[in-house]
Length: 195
Image (cartoon, rainbow, N blue to C red; front, side, top):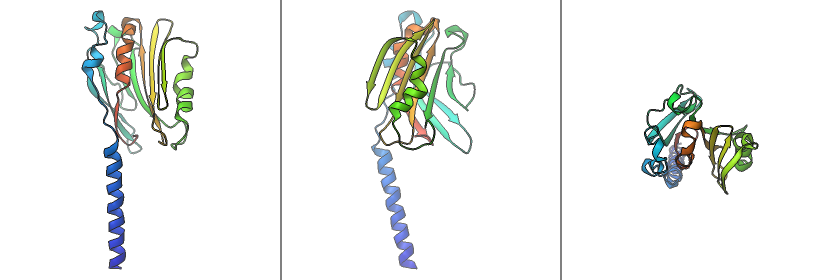
């Protein structure tokens, strides 16, 4: 019995050690508010000043995740049910920055590029595209419809059980800052249950 207990303890320690190594080997995300602020047009600098911000999405016992991102100072989160920051009337009533982790159904490895297209990017098929960039593990889109500009960025790891995205909806008062929001969306740290 003592030998069996010793084997279980050794296996448990090995398992924890390998988990720690895999988490430690994940590259740290470089969140650089100064680089984001450098992309804000001069006439919008009074309205948009980005800083490193934690946005918590808390679903109680089922999951809690923290997104760390460069976001405009003073933007508020209405509810921790969603990782959404809003800037209020000076930047446009519908202007917001939304962060999310998504499984597109069951949380298991799948084609995340296809899932991101279906969930995030297909809604902009009729929009005027300003910029689109695709890599094997990410996609960026900047598009406009009517007087609103959208910045959508999705990223994933091959074999992961979910992908992540950042969606900025920018009304006319701050639409020219789309490149700054794109830069911010492309550097998001994630910690908690939905990594």
